[in-house]
Image 1: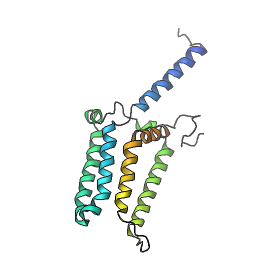
Image 2: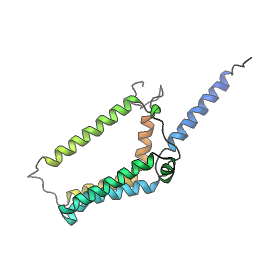
Image 3: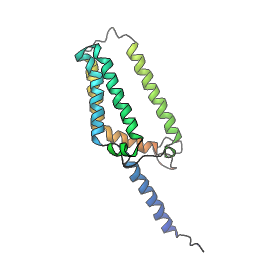
Image 4: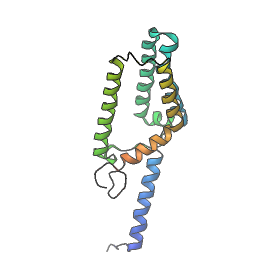
Length: 172
């Protein structure tokens, strides 16, 4: 015969599962050097045309694309993830479908806004080294707050659990 657990044992078991899930989610983030690399790459991407002219822009774009593709390829393998400092990988079914939808919509909206801002002329707005300033701010945010941002997004993405405040899955 199987023995049913007592309510206290069941509570401890559920708390243990939640604790381990939180530990696994916390370990699914990159090493510090990855944030520094992407911060420097973002700064170089935006600031290079201000210092070296528009001719260098295509080379910087290709270099940044190579870094992004290399990062994506490394994430797909166990050794690559270990190189990036990720001990675990979040399963796709652990990500809230509503969070995935909203994150895609927000990314597309920011992309569309950036494209519109790039092609709309700004005759009255002449800020010297505006791209350098934007690159410095973006690079600093990635370097200083990259791991915190990654943790916050991971906790939002795992909002598929019911009763969790702040989750974007529509249950809270």
